[in-house]
Image (cartoon, rainbow, N blue to C red; front, side, top):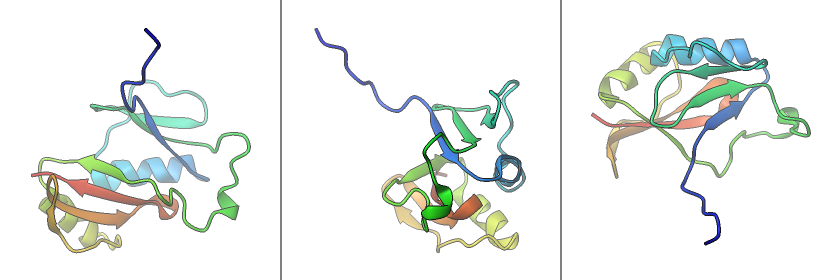
Length: 122
């Protein structure tokens, strides 16, 4: 039988400033750094799929892309979308209105370097 793909196994956002992006996810979303990360990246503890911010891979030109991640929908699960929405809005992060999504309450925010991320749950 041929090999198959089971689904996403790791997600990383390529960013210009890894430490600033990591600080955003730690400070605004409460994510925790994993005990170890490879050079040029910060991996966060948690799951079900590991998440990281990292330096751009060879051949990736973030300066030439006006909207990083265009066409990719990245959803982050939480136990309380309303609380995270309020926390981000209070911190001045651009957020959409909280609405009923396919997986419960949801909203989208603009994260580090212009990535649009959706939070859902709770």
